[in-house]
Length: 184
Image: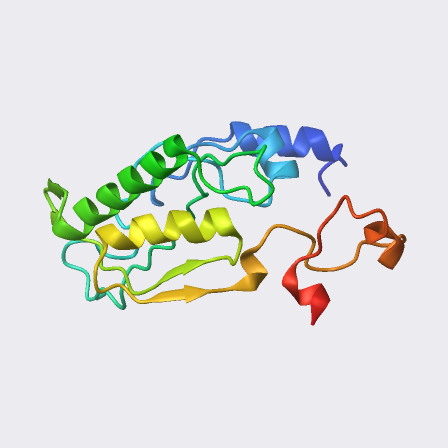
């Protein structure tokens, strides 16, 4: 005879309570909630040795591929709100110089650990065309000779697109400055 019909939750509770088969790999028992609600694998606390794809498991035939790319986003230094140009203050200039020194130290090999020395090679220094961003980038570039420079107007403050539903009327009062893309 067929087994009596069980409520789905009761069946899942029974499945969660069953001991694992000794012939299979022993795994942690899943809770009822994990069986019913979570499509993702359960969170684990163990460290993932190959978290960055550079350290395959020992004995593995996998090889490391490619380079690690670092994209550093640096905000401009403190600026003068009273000045219509909004140029850097003396503190903002100091902040930019210290940032440049820190980046230069990373390029020189600041950190050494079990994997070797960490050296970051900078391929490009990009800044917006806003005065305070240019001043900050100039001071950072002084600490990084040989790193090419570029200016990108799309990095400027402002809205890159017109918000809906206001459209062009959003910019009419002059309180919000559009980014360069709106002017093209």
